[in-house]
Length: 216
Image 1 (cartoon, rainbow, N blue to C red):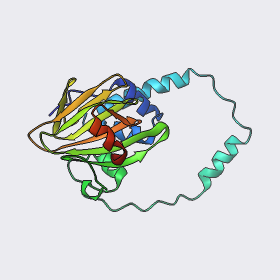
Image 2: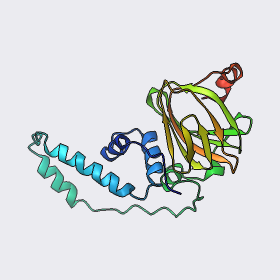
Image 3: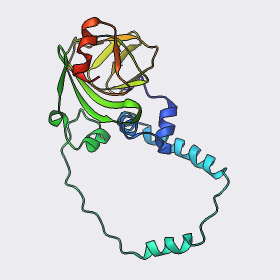
Image 4: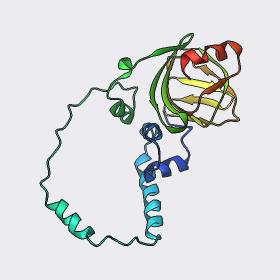
């Protein structure tokens, strides 16, 4: 199944430039693994970045820079031992699985709501959070907004909201002004990787009361 909701080119360019946070890099790499022309897109972004660098004025090298570089080249190279290959569940993209170092069932899953569980994976600056969601078929996630940008990558199943239907490999990107409620597809469990800035802003009273306990 082809991806119908890809990330914007600006994310790929930032990924190629190495300017993303750890959580952002994991998210973008996971999404790129679903795109057949991802390598070409990243290479093109790197080429553009290289052209821009060539147009910058060169820095003056330190007087001993060449000597220090040659000294490093003369040091013996010690090869690091290769880690044993890990079996990977087909649901997890290779970049995400390698970064986690484990499979889905080994994560620490906590209750999010009826038919829903979440696993917090990473926290960065500006309260940036990388986490995963597992939701049963047909579950409805209450209407909510976001404190900043939120991106959701579907790893299994599907969900729908007022912005469309998102399936495996698709990414939904929402901002502060985007209120929505999600409905999980009825065919199978939905598993998503989400990257968000700050906490979710739920509209319903019950959801707001429960928010301190679900850590979102």
